[in-house]
Image 1 (tube, one colour):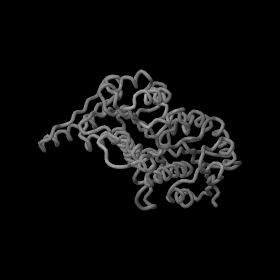
Image 2 (cartoon, rainbow, N blue to C red):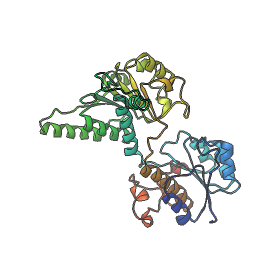
Image 3 (cartoon, rainbow, N blue to C red):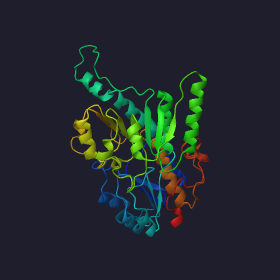
Image 4 (cartoon, rainbow, N blue to C red):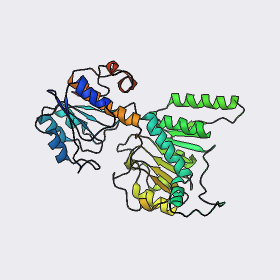
Length: 371
């Protein structure tokens, strides 16, 4: 009920974010609850209607098209700040926001472990054919133990291929390499010295216990990684150089029984080529959390038993989704109150601990320097 008004395009988990906006900022908060859009992408017309004639800030979703049309509407309503409810912002035309003087926020720092865990879950589910076996049981087809029933792939002492060795990729690699004694091969234009040191330390520990160590190798080409790896997991940024990086030719370079995992960005994979590869190579498997034309899948993917597919839930732990909401709210509230940008990378002070100890800062405004 304050003089400031913040619009939110989807109901968000938790309550801390709402307290940030109502108690810390003193704003009125309007959440779009129209049943037509609760379970689907909110179209631009509905977002503009929500913004209305008076709106100071918006929290929106990565599925929405935040470009000149929406930023123009927000600016016309007196808006000054928009925060994406996501760490990525491929859906946001940042220059269009900057042109009309609107700040753009995102929510980094709370998705790392949650996303890495889901990536590991996809890997294991694909390797051990968990979804196929689950469907088999639910259909009442299990008549007794058989030697060859749903035989899958052992990951122990295999080779993990990591494409993109940033925070999420590194966290996933640690989970897989420690849990399964896997060697690591990674492809990244930047050397990850910290990850290499970690892997060497883990290898030294294994050898101190009388066990075989593990290796960590940075390769110069993606092709080297594909040919060497039992599991390939994709974690690079999505841009013109990585769009369809996994195409027909590169899929053909992977091992016949390899596993491809993508919990990053859907367009990293040519999904049509992937469907063809899955159908032609029944021992090849994949685990996907994201899709090229999300929320749609390319025809035929749903019919591939060797594909584990889930609906973009990599960040779907209550702590992470609630933390993302709090960071988005802190971006909006902080910018409207004139707070500076946060100078740290640890977002825990925003999402955990006493409410009164939340830093007086904007967690992440990506175009602050250009405003």
